[in-house]
Length: 80
Image 1 (cartoon, helix red, strand yellow):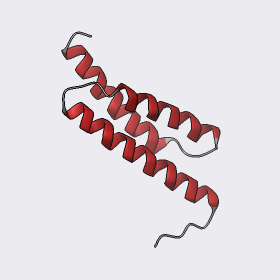
Image 2: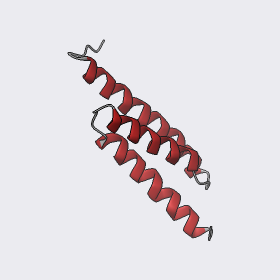
Image 3: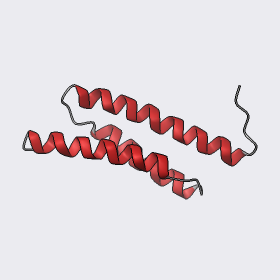
Image 4: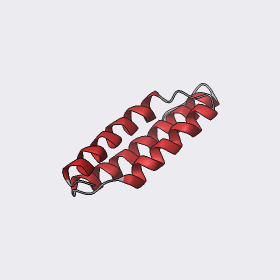
């Protein structure tokens, strides 16, 4: 069992977990050769929510950058 010293630590861990779950799902979509635009949009929104709640956006931003880059590569490949 994991215990958190503060509510902020708990919230940060929760946001990071959600970002990982969204990124994992988006990665599965990308692996099929499709653009994971919904995953990218979701991570972008989660990044905004993180900043608005004075949490660190570093992890969410990293996942977002990976998905955005993969989406851009797919779009360029198929000329979209």
